[in-house]
Length: 152
Image 1 (cartoon, rainbow, N blue to C red):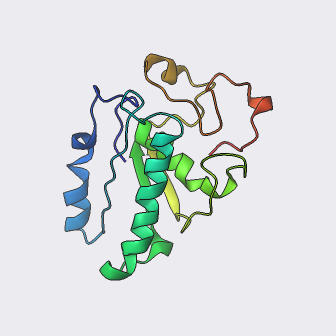
Image 2: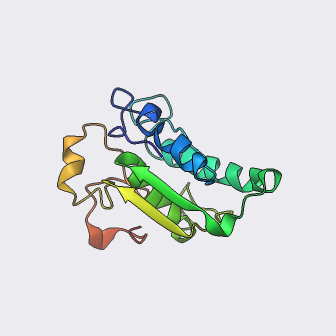
Image 3: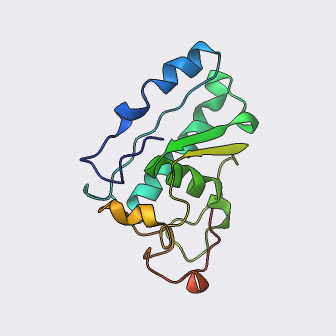
């Protein structure tokens, strides 16, 4: 998953284009996803998270067609993409009241977060990204003790 500070004006899918072909050359299937950024129509919370969830659900749908073993899926993301990869791995623990609630179609084997922000509320790096979206459960400034979902 690409990074870009959650913003359409920074990086994007091109940032990860070198990685896909190299992994494919080594026999590893690659599924590169895009998502609406926080400053795009429908982006932010919950839209961006819904985009990530939809892309992973689509992977589960298409896996049999391509002979993919979902038990071997590893999510890789850089920066904001690392944040979303970590979130995606914790989808099964999203509270029932959340618009993001729903059973994941598969659970990734692992997550590789390359400079991803794992905790928006406390990460000093997230303040440098002016478009940082709300967390999967509300505002990134909501105190940890009042959040109802576990951190990824």
